[in-house]
Amino acid sequence: MADYSTYDGPSLEWQDFVKSTTLNATGLAPGQSITDLQHKTNSSRDAESAKYLAESGIQDKVSFKDHQIQTQDGQHIVARVYRPKNVQTDVRLPVYLFFHGGGFLFGTLSSEDANCQRLVVALPIIVVNVCYRHTPQFKHPTQANDAWDAFSWVLDHFDTIGGDRDKLIIGGISAGGSLAASVVVKENRTSKSESRIKGQILCIPQLFHPNGFPFHLVASRENCSWSRHVNAPIIPRAQLDLFRDLLGADDIGDTSLYIGNCTDADVVGMPKTTIIVAGMDPLRDEGLLYAEKLRRNK
Image 1 (tube, rainbow, N blue to C red):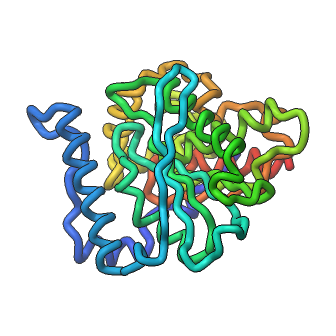
Image 2: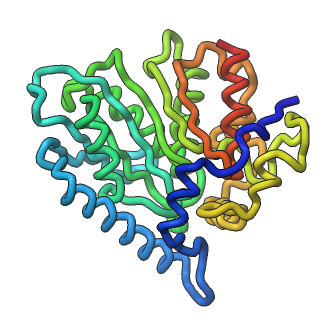
Image 3: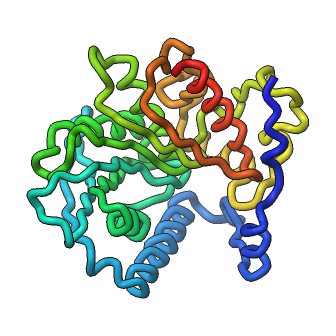
């Protein structure tokens, strides 16, 4: 039985942060609509990203272009492709296909500009920032389908964006981590040869339905992250339930999204993986359980 209680509790960095920062309330305020919450959150995220770019100056070191991606239902989503200006355009660079977090409700192209441009300048790489469709306007499986369509688009456009097709990494944060995981597993299941994905980065991913956590796999139901951190700061259980209700992904065993339910056979031979978790996150043990599954099936 898995016991991840050693990862429990806040880090010193978090404790220092909350001493000097007022944490905003999460979820709906009394009388607030979902669309109003979505608009206000997106506006705040956009502003924070723009502020960082203006203060850091890194936007002067990056070029970007927006591309239309046709989806399997005949609509279009947008991907913003970033590239470092100090690298010649004929030089092929590794590609990072990125899906943002926000519970499938929040996130825009602009909200991710700062994060994506930081990566481009630091590494250097090409980042493909995908604005998949959000709830409440679109429900599951739209988001998972959009993620797969974005992956397919990248495979067809390495020459267009100047990417190295032998160095494709996929990743995301929170809801985006769930989408990244779904793409990698689908590729692993369906590819007739070596995976075209060379690595994945899953940051605080949700990998099980909120009502489908496998308590039988952990040593203590009371000490697992889903029990101990039901009222966690930033993303408490109530917020996760709101995201789930809006998404409409009600099948606990749906492995097109809830990747933690995949069989061992589904993940044999997966690409190199980094999973990042947070000690006080309800989702912490989901990522750690998935890491164990991947280790067993290298």
